[in-house]
Image (cartoon, rainbow, N blue to C red; front, side):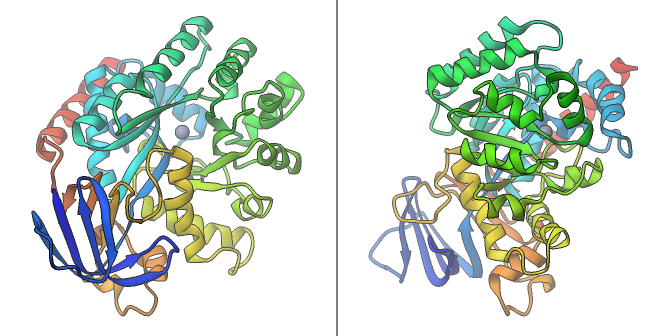
Length: 425
Ligand SMILES: [Zn+2]
């Protein structure tokens, strides 16, 4: 399939804006810049002065939690999890997770997201939903052994790791566990062994709340990052989700281990966990990427909202000049892509055509004094008009092209959550 996008502003590999064309051939970007007219196109799309940019990587999400959107809100994290979320999750089937993920994919695509890092259970069905849709996913291990099943958790993790790292160019898999507070010493040591065996990264929730940090200090006499680093979990790097409560020593340790911090501002605000001081982390040399977390704690999967919040919260914690709009956009695009490793994060000839387009044809985007500032501070997902993954247009002006209709997905999800609530009560 050869596609020509013309009359476009383009965010190029240096994150500068140029005007011209983007040509896509066999899933790859074939050309960026001046018009070339000697080629035959399957699609010739007038972008009408929209911005074409590499799509966003949502580095921390739990896709099937779309089913739990707005089911239970306005509770503290522990109550919310134990009383509302866990009883429903315990009853979710593989089919529920499949359709919950499809619902999430609709939202990702209409929000410019081209790849996710997803941590949840029933991962076979989650990954399958992404592959069936043509969407990129990195499955993240979600090992937890509060029920004492340490060995089976480690076995399942290793099986998934081996299977999904050679399964499809649209997917990959990273070693991971839910969090230190749902893991025994044996599980943590087992994860570190796998990291050493495969010389690969590990991902986990980390230092999300004050209570979590305090309980780790009580249990292990050290903070969560210190405990994990001491056990060798991050010897080959990784990603840590949330990191709202890091002390000076934690920051140094995570930097030393080359761990990417994935910030989830909406979820941290809504659950009153706090504001991660990402400016300080970045100053100390840590890489920052962005995620939405699940739809039950956010409650949307809108990366543009997270991008906005990442920008403005960094100003509240520091000062208005702490981060520029371009800095934040790089976190959502390039740093995110590097953290996932399944997409390039750079609009460049030869790379996979994983891109999105933002229109300026709505009042919130006019006038165009500064394109990047408009995107970061003013745009919402209603401005996204096209999302393409590996050269295939999966979303265009309100229409999805993922092999199943949005109506069918809505119908299944509405029915599923009604059944789950009934079963849980
Ligand atoms: Zn999470």
